[in-house]
Amino acid sequence: MQTLQHESRPPAAPRGFSIRITSMMIFVVLAMLVGLGFALMPTASPGRASLRVRCGANERVLLVALYDYAQQHHGSLPASLTALQQNAANPGAISKLLICPEGHTTLIYRGGGLNLKMIPKDTILVYELPANHTDSRTGKAAMNVGYADGSVRLITQPQANNIIAELKAGHNPPRAEMIK
Image 1: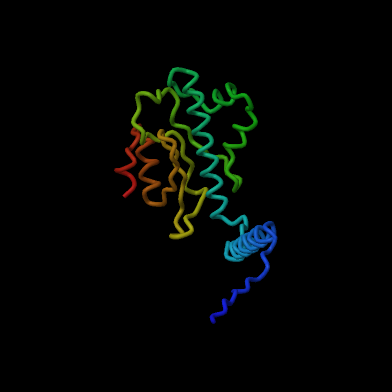
Image 2: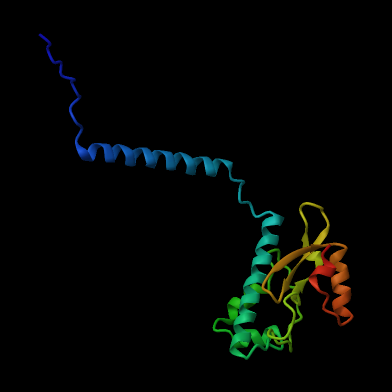
């Protein structure tokens, strides 16, 4: 005669128990990943490169304010940055954008009298002098340049000098010609 053997199973864990363990494991893994991320992240010291990036971010915000002004004025840009400040809901915020985090205040506005609907997207609207910054990769003097398409680029010497010479001569050089 054959006897049937029953497989013995361990008693089932309460249903909430496995969910809690799974949740705890996910939490532990996420905590380890976050900790690893902080360990590998470079320190956020206020070095020259980070100040240069903040200056470029200020120019981007200024370009957004210029776009907002142009939307309210049928595409026309303000005659000057002072006119932009006077039209702004918070003129003090615009004033802060005009000062580079490194302490330089030399921002040149080229958009006065232009209409955003009629100019090429690579038209230079704002720039700063190359003496304000240094490119960390090359060690050369550099400047942030803000274009009508809303982009801001860091331009190093000697291209920066070429752009300034063209602007002073009354030309607004296309980006493709000046950045090679």
